[in-house]
Image (tube, rainbow, N blue to C red):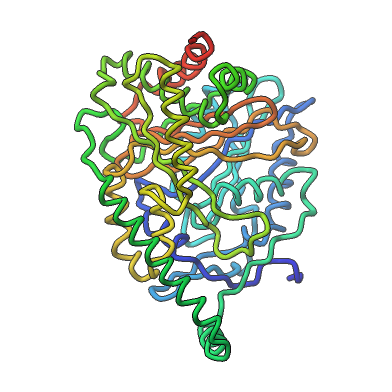
Length: 449
């Protein structure tokens, strides 16, 4: 193993471990993406599968296997690891389109990852029209967050296979830390202040979470009994339309506009179902990555979040956007360490042993705090190809929380906003109506004054 690669063993942080404790057969906790590639000639399935396996074999993080322990679970490099065992290929009847791709991907995304092996899979999907093929990526949330999933996915592409692995930061030795504080009293004072500050933050987050809990509306289509069955919708939106809406309605961010589009689509979808949107509050969890580019790595997940009320009861699209923009601005001003959406920070400060007992119970109560998750996965702008086939579309996928009907993931890539919707198939057999409502909501905002 080279000096630049991840050590053969690394610890899980409490938040990484929490994502494993949340997992249930019906609620797998993996993140993913569907990347669609445009080839200039016939697709060679065997060559692509070999290429993906060869590149995955060189990524140290993908060689790590979970070793469970009540006191200190950790990652250890798997012996006799063969990435080819994690790469699968499937063929849909040609010429397949986006709908056929979504049907197969929904079946594949529903299956939990085998925790006895490294926690990832790649699924090559061929048979798409116009010499296209797709790769479905699945990574357990304990292994990567959205930022890391992008980093790993990029290293499978032609231009980035020689990138060195980011070395993991070994966990500090508690005795070394203690003696260091004794030798330098000023550091002891600083550490105490930091501990008190974090304790105050944690109490504030916990109190805010308790204040903001509420019982979900019994008839809300956003909540349902947990089911293993899944449906996916893969919806592209022209980024130029989002930018025009933002400019026309007085600024804000592209993400504010996307949240307003989602709120409008939910309103249209509820109307088509005969639901009264005025009686169905929708509070979204917006995850926030807290890792800075120059920050040493410590664990795989460094997350917080904001809660945002999506005003599905508001008939005017411009007013919906203004409301979301104001609320998100307030969230950002308060920062990611305050408010009920910061509960992942709190989870990251709890001992691992407590997660064994508490986290599965807390996960069942996600519906008390939010009704859906909308995550925005930032992607760099670059030329991307696999074996010379250019990336045409890239749809992220977010896990579906216990008791929730749908989760939404968004990414902006090369002039398109890609929206991946994962739904409880039993609860939402009409997901295609929500998919159709997304471009309709864009048109509403474009036409509104």
